[in-house]
Length: 140
Image 1 (cartoon, one colour):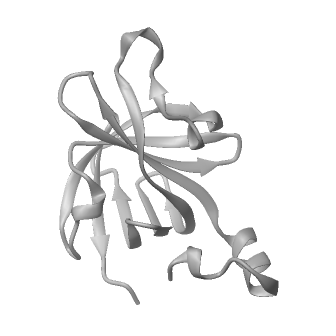
Image 2 (cartoon, rainbow, N blue to C red):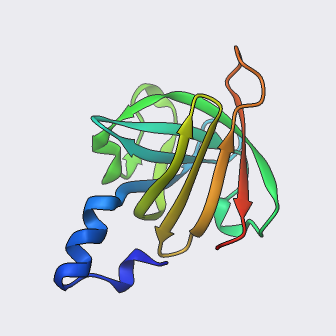
């Protein structure tokens, strides 16, 4: 379900209470181009670095993801240089997501962006590392 379709009325109000904001930044200037997936969690953005764009993912495909420290919510609307000479970020996509399952080793969620939408999961197969896997799941 694409959240952008439901902007008015009671259904929109219900969707906004279930869905949280997310953003995907294209981050350049610090080594190779990569993408930062940021999911709103309380007062912060839980963040993973992706070496490939999630907009190109097909169902069943997985890509490596590296867990980064949580970011400030200001990054939901920010584009431009990153402090400390760590490159620049530009918005690739934004929207809402619904968290379906969350455990220390697995997050399952539905993204509703303009370019990136559908069911995904983040898997943390090995404790003690920052290595995760982002997988595109079939929509139910």
